[in-house]
Length: 582
Image (cartoon, rainbow, N blue to C red; front, side, top):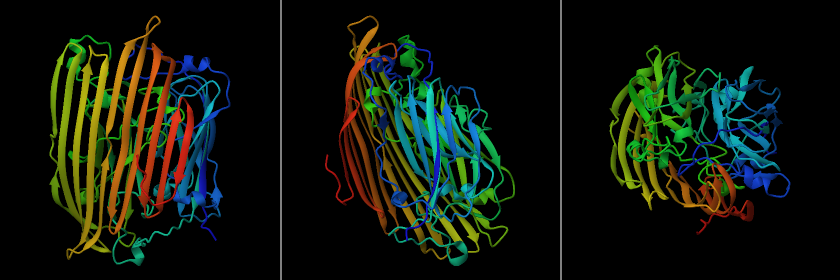
């Protein structure tokens, strides 16, 4: 008999917005309003983000809980839509899936949205740019890591959507299940094991969820995210954690908007000022989300450059959206080595900021805590703290509108600390390496722009017993290269221009978890052109190739997709364990 599953459902409707226009810049936000008005009426089209099916998708939910069904219009400066959440009765589950179903029509920019439960973020997502004929899309996310919140009664479930007018219908459901797989699991309850559950930095599907989740978030008047307007605009929240905490991980959600939406392509301020350009998209092309504990940096993240559906060339994202656009990644930072600082019974301040930021970034975080229920207090202490403060070098040269701007950065950090709980005395070691390269070039009097960025991050977490024996070890290496080339030429009509663009980006991941290994290679190659007037696309064409290949303990999955001019021409899926060739 298959294990039972619980499903949470969200249904939403978005309405078209009114947006002020501004002079076009090299990488700007565009709409297809006038393009789609010239097309004949067609049925609503489904938009997709290419990803693997969830391991629980083959299961029948033991129960399905509709959470929210709502039509969204202009939500600027309005509080989030909310409803009371209560876990379903008479339903035993161990796995939870959030399913967001949405439909939209009209004319509007893409919009950012999120789902929070009791102030803790469960999902950050963006909406596609709709058409008058209408579009629809679905997002499914495993939210088992939030089980401690999902099992509580009378929490408020909130959804918030930023920007404009229009109509978007969205429905949300939660599916919960007892989930089983062929993967061998070493995870046992603390009371049944002489060692704690596997102490990893990642919040993977097979890991024991935290006993307590504390949101690090805003008041909720305009969503629970903090709005970061500049590099000096850090936010802090005081938290006193339980004294019996034996493991801690902070999970950070982040997205970038406004003048920093294309931060990875921004030139220095001097280039903009000397040339008298009207754009405010400057301050260079390096950004890093920084997490602090009191006055100490405990981790940082260079985020994946997620491109929303109005970005670069909106024709690229019909109907296959960018990597991460429907389910923006969150980032986990291991805090267990710092429990020696936190377990003193005092309030400590967790800070979030963005290095080199300009307006604006939306950030919040969830603090995941694992508790030793056999004692009121565990002992902990620090061993090593090494976080180099400066890692970025910049080179800049330009003459009028042509120039080249290079940024390189490297950093190696090392933290360690011990925790003595009823399971024993264990030391957690954390090593992290970051390598960052970015080049922005302008040629041909600034009408040609090339952006190249490489980010490589390696995180290793190792746990040893008091005798020095290895208890667990996990290493995660991620790369996300990006390349954009854009040529802008005068158009045939008044105030029009022709933009020719190519884009390549990917997310590559290799993970070693004890004797288990997994790989992910998710890449997109796109090319296209468009005639633009102001911020409206008048005509154009685009081609998208996407390759998604994953191999892990759940099995293998690959998907190859080709989309041309708004339609999927080829979509091939395979569950065979053989890596696809390009």
